[in-house]
Amino acid sequence: MSLLGIALRNLRRNKLRTTLTVLGVAVAVMAFLLLRTILASWNASIEYAAKDRLGTRHKVSFIMELPKRYVDRIRQEKGIQAATWANWFGGKDPRHPEEFFMTLAVDPASYLDVYNEMQVKPAEREHWLGDRQGALIGDHLAAKLALKVGDRISLESGIFRGTYTFNVSGIYTSQSPTIDRTGFLFHWDYFDQSRPEVFRDKVGWIVSRVDDPAHTADISASVDKGFDSLDVQTLTMSEKQMNNSFLGMFSAILQAVQIVSIIILLILLLILGNTIAMGVRERRHEYGVLRALGFLPRHVATFVIGESVALGLIAGLIGVAIAYPLVEYGLGRWIEENMNTMFQWFHVQLDVMALSVALALLLGAVAGAIPAWRASRLTVIDALRRLD
Image (cartoon, rainbow, N blue to C red; front, side, top):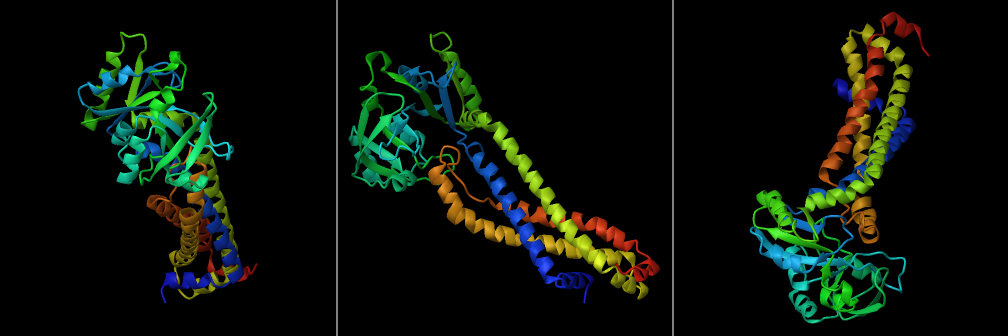
């Protein structure tokens, strides 16, 4: 039998302690994986942002509106392939006042051209384009509010007065992490004509697609330069920059999650280290017998390190095996449907799973390093004399 084989057999010497240690480390791995998934999912809108999409807003603040005529001017800009616009509506369903979802007044045809990741059945697309009171909703929102094509729904806005009634014309889906599948989109014309005259013909922001993503910086500068001499100036940036500026408001939360994940790793290290140290103390006499039979100090160290690494690896694999289905088929879906403002996409990534297992294995080696060093330094006389 090999040295590592003997080390693995040592794990069965105290089955209760080994089981409790594996469970403790597996829970720590699960917690670490969940926190790293939160960070990865939170940053998904940045990582997967469209490289050929630009956003243009008021130079002073995102909440200030732009003249609608700016859309036509941007469309004439060299390098712009398509442009659309939207206004934040802030609607809520009186039947479900606790549910929050994105409600936007958009230009239907151009919006689907710019956001071509949204998948809509052709018949439902045509129905939405032809119905002034039509609404296109995400599949997650449809499930949450129990809506289907053909239903009517009334929304009340926290920004604009009155009740707006819509016909559900279609339901969209998307596999892109940047698309909110709890969105509610309706005709901008229907929304604009309901506003007082002084507020009409103004849009919240403009989104455009460019021909060549390599020139987004130049095109952004050119767009803003064209409005510098007007009363309302603009700020244009890539979709990645826009999403990054939004997430910047939550930097303290992200930092806290990072710190907690590091603390979990330290806890994992302490659990493994304590178990291995206890095993070494109990088997000190056995190590003395092995040394007397001719085993070298490095052989003894291999026993200890091998046992520690195997313990970490087994616990890491079990933790990932439990966490993956828990997130993918339970927690992740719930978060996407109920916390869509922060997590439009919540899935365990392969690199996060690999990192979790690799760190469990690495920390197993680190946890066993000191006990292995101490065991290898034992002399035969000291090891056989001390039985505690």
